[in-house]
Image (cartoon, rainbow, N blue to C red; front, side, top):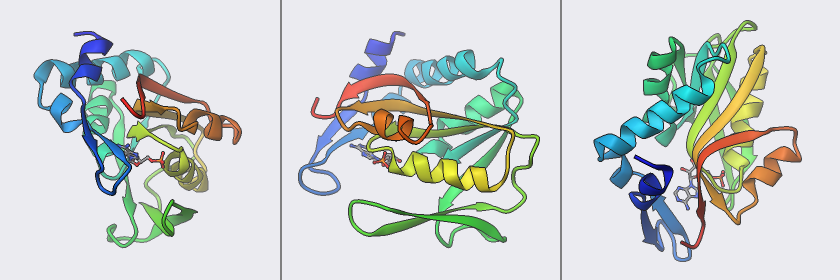
Length: 179
Ligand code: AMP
């Protein structure tokens, strides 16, 4: 399996969820055993020697490959969820989206000052969600934060947006947003 073959397995759905958006649907790649394994193995290869203690997944597509990687690396898994979904006391961050505001949450006490964290999501678009996730994990006061997405949508400047805020992101695959 090659990166090119994985990219070819990702489905582009035009005008979803609203007109003008080219939705990159990873479910078609996840359904192929070789692609799913490639994603997990490629991440493990990149992160296994960095002393990561917790993989933090962003709802909801950060919950698919993230736990598989965590198990393989002997790390735990912590979910970041949308507002009102987590049952116990939470830390929160609100951020601006294209239409209105969004709030994300993580359980208080899920991470501690000794944790080396990998924050993971499926797709990097504008970078707003990843920035909010980094701010949320910073509130927990961890030792070190790495960030990763399976796919970078090139042409939306998410990487630059994050870099200007001191965050270097690593993505497995790059796709032109209009492809
Ligand atoms: P952003 O905050 O703009 O970087 O958006 C990233 C989040 O929105 C990720 O959780 C993605 O799953 C989702 N997302 C944004 N744009 C797309 C797209 N074109 N196709 C699929 N998912 C997307």
